[in-house]
Length: 102
Image 1 (cartoon, helix red, strand yellow):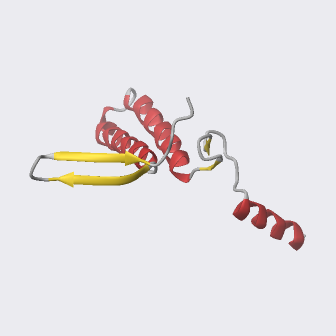
Image 2 (cartoon, rainbow, N blue to C red):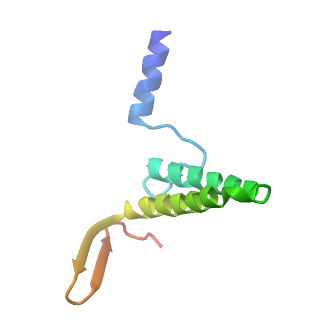
C-alpha cells in the first residue's frame, strides 16, 4: 500500500496530474495558473447566477470577476520573457519567448 502511495507521488511530481481543462497544450504540462483561471471563472459564473436571486451579492460578484481577470492575466504573463518600461517615452515593450507554430 505504501508503495502505491509512493508511486502516485512520484508520478505526480515527475509527470503531473491532468485535471480537465488544466493541461496546457502549449507546454505539454499541467498548469496551475490555467487551473486557477478556470476555477475563478466558474466561481464568477455561480456568483452571477446567485446575484439574480439575491441583490445583496453585488460586491461579491464584482470581486469574483476581478479575481477571474487577475487569474487570466497571471496565466498570460507566463509567456513574457522580457519587459521594458520607458517612462520618458511612456512606452511598455513586452516580448514573448514562445514561438508560434502556425
